[in-house]
Image (cartoon, rainbow, N blue to C red; front, side, top):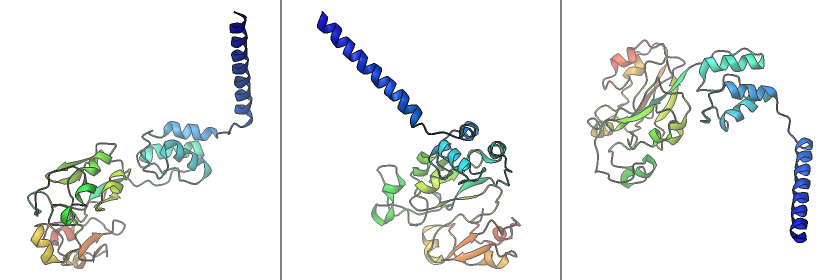
Length: 261
């Protein structure tokens, strides 16, 4: 009986010592956190998507307080959250341009040819490593296996008729789909941008037409008709610069393949 009491006393004493030691250490080595960090974390969406470039909302909050990130750095929260963060920091929110993801491919099942039928894992990265970089005749087009869909935390992108399609209203421009696409077909563009080129093929016109009925053939009609120097054809494919584009629509009207949305 005495042995049990002694053992209990020893265990209790050790536990008490450790508790006191940890309590003192916690106070001595505690890292002071700026109250603004906690406030900013509280107004951020809490998705921890990483679209801001930091490891979660708390990481962004810390960066904002340190002056390493702007108050409007959260793409998910947009202008409303930027204003709240700016108020906490005592700054102006500044202009926030809403962005959305855009898929540079319109090669649906009906419009794009396949070289063979693929049956296997539904993953674009895997399919892109298959024979001829996948079954599609166009090696630049959307593979349609849904890797971007799986990456999106907002259910804003889906596979429709063989290609990825973005729901602009649901998209938060976190960039997850952009990083996931092995063919780099997705980019973030201004939400208000009306005209964009739905093609990424670098092949010459004849080769494009042999595999896709709606691919850009690099004819430069869009470039010639643009009065604002917003459209350029480089490496056989047109690209529109949103910062120069006025959404006049002339390029879309003149495009013979109707590939400018």
